[in-house]
Amino acid sequence: MPQPTPVPYSLEIPTRWKDNDVYGHVNNVEYYSFFDTVINSFLIKQGGLDIHRGAVIGLCVESHCRYDGPLAFPETVTARLEVVRLGSSSVTYAVTLFGEASGQNPAAEGWFVHVFVDRETRRPVPIPDPIRSALGPLLRAEG
Image (cartoon, rainbow, N blue to C red; front, side, top):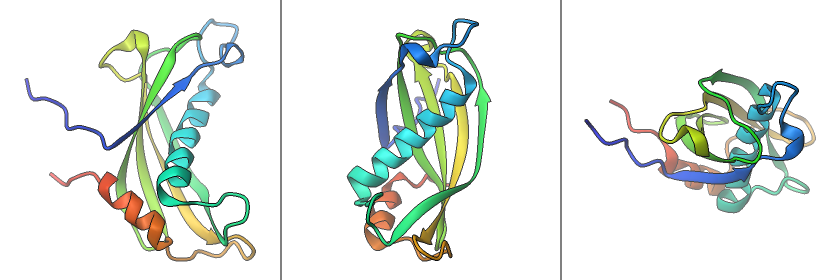
């Protein structure tokens, strides 16, 4: 059996009591929060994104999630991040979520598209060089 390709970035995210719904598992809306958390954590820590005062911000223009299995408090979620497409002003991320109970089987898989825009005008701008440099190594190999 072939071994999976190592993923360049992952983040451990603890679930919270409030994440569970009345059915006893993490509510689907929280999965999108995990996507946001791994992406923005990476952009801030690795790409230098200044979410409070920077001239450029990233806006989500599209997202999708396929739910493969449940997550539940008090699990820690491992969120793995890759870049599928790196354009001039936009980036498409692939995010995979794993729970402690799911082992190597993903709990969810999805994508998330950011368009980088001028904070004031909200018009698209080129991805800033430090962010582009940070994202480059996450670019998924073709083939």
